[in-house]
Image 1: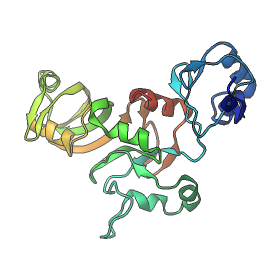
Image 2 (image 1 turned 180 degrees about the vertical axis):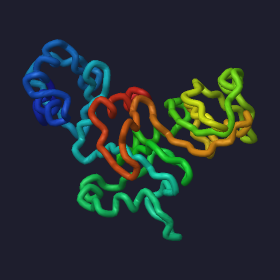
Image 3 (image 1 turned 90 degrees about the horizontal axis):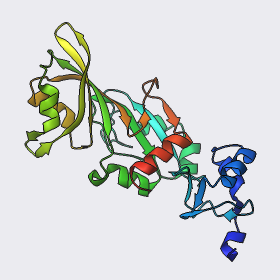
Image 4 (image 1 turned 180 degrees about the horizontal axis):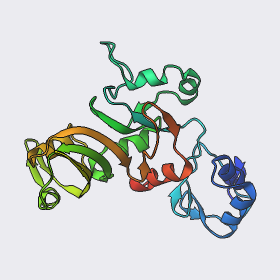
Length: 252
């Protein structure tokens, strides 16, 4: 065992502190060969790691170990800007964090992962993990984003096919990964779209291009992280599984 491996904290304790499992259950995971440290499968109980530098995977999913890194889900309300501050005094995401100075002091600078326009509500991720946030926003990683849209009219049967084939917008073609009708109402419909794009107003422009202007738009998922029944304006920490799924989605 190297000198570095003799320093730090026992692996089973690190896993327990990260919320993966109890220390006893973590020992069973290690013994079963389900834990990797820096690309190496670890089976011995005496292994020590530095949570600040070690890259640990359990069953192939990376585990967030650093106590100073924060991963949050926000249900951004309609009418709120996706910024931490606004010089014109308009409501913004930063306002929701203003009473959490203890969190801000602990976490350092939080930032929003991508944006939702003011009229779009729903899931917005907040973190201070720069590497993960950068990759989630970079189009090359194609992290899927799911939206629920209330639109005017009833989509024709070929609308989904047209969207999946690709639509030419003024800034290039956009392909929708999936499209389905969720509900129909008098004069309007509820549809769900999944796409890998993050261009400005892309969902609204897509649906307008096929003749169904958006009346209300909600982002319900980023990758495997889902909004669920989280109330507008509320924050919640992501759990270990959710953070691991985001790491996996961007190859970390």
